[in-house]
Length: 145
Ligand code: SF4
Image 1 (tube, protein in one colour):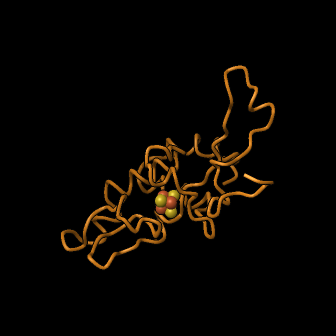
Image 2: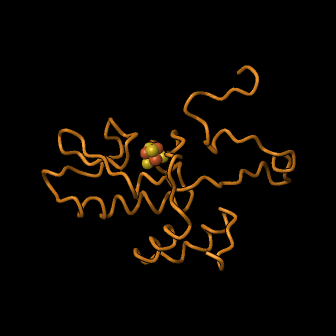
């Protein structure tokens, strides 16, 4: 790749972050900080396709991470159901690789999930145990959020 150009669409992707010398030469192998934010699409922009499929986000036109069809279930059942909860928790944990579609995507970066929204969500689903590791990986002061 010539100069400092990045592939189109990859702006903001933590996948393309250049390691510092210290990170690259860490004694136990390269340390790759995972500060990628949970994708807000999973909370804020459900997409319903013409055929009733409810996709987890606007980038999923093929329905790879669709969570069901509105002909078979109602919206709340799907949007707040087990599969969406799993996707959201994987994003909060920074385990983007567990969802290939998300791993290969930079995520939506023109709106966000604020730390307060993430904390409130963890409280709603009874997973406050993930809050310390989330604030740790994002470099946030857990007590001040
Ligand atoms: S990371 Fe990409 S594929 Fe995953 S939910 Fe966000 S926009 Fe969709």
